Length: 305
Image (tube, rainbow, N blue to C red; front, side):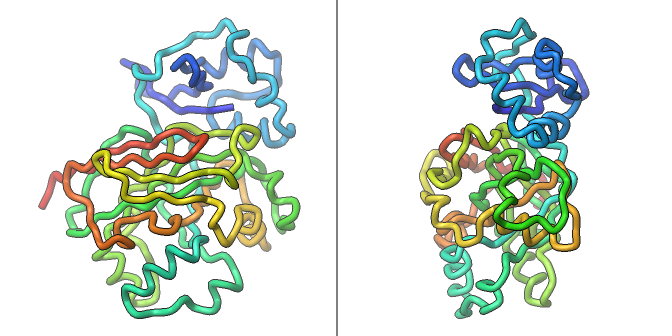
């Protein structure tokens, strides 16, 4: 099941839809749920993800064939895409050793031993999450802008002290994530021993939609980044060192996780400009593609300088 949050032409609020990718359409999720006769709320994407996760994928199973529903449909290219989930929080991990090693080597530093002992993360700004095809505005305090090619996992149900061997049962879905980075201020912040903060919090893009676990296997996912059509990054999620179940187990130690919590994987090896010694330029179009999840595309716009 693919869930999207979109804005219809002439309407202010978001609409929750189910994606019929084969026919390039989105169906009204509330109408589909009503026709199924399920005791499920479809007013938010979190509602759908929570119901599906708590009921062991029952909704995903019921909507395998979207042609059976007499629901309002909209062409994909007629809609404005929003962040696919109403995020309750954003935690971004550093789960790929190759990326960390490449970044540290640029400053003649080795990987800290603690990284091998526990999955570490920073807390991002879930209020600046944007969607597919939205402009990303270059922050006026930075001269070095970068993308980061990541996979995001969305928590589907509440839990605490979750064992890693059962944590996959708490995964509600996945989507592509671009952890935009203002590298110059990020490096200044982190030199103090805190952060990143302003170096990250201005924007994070997610989308184009959320895909439930029954339709996506991270182990086989290829991850590609293109800038103005040129491939800058090409990696495999299977090279990850810390899995999402391990991340969920770590976060949930004496601290509850909730539906809508977003966990970022961190950048795949060679998945950002920093690792290639290249920076983005105003007007660049960045496309991130992950097998089975689609393409997340955004244009970088600079208004102030």
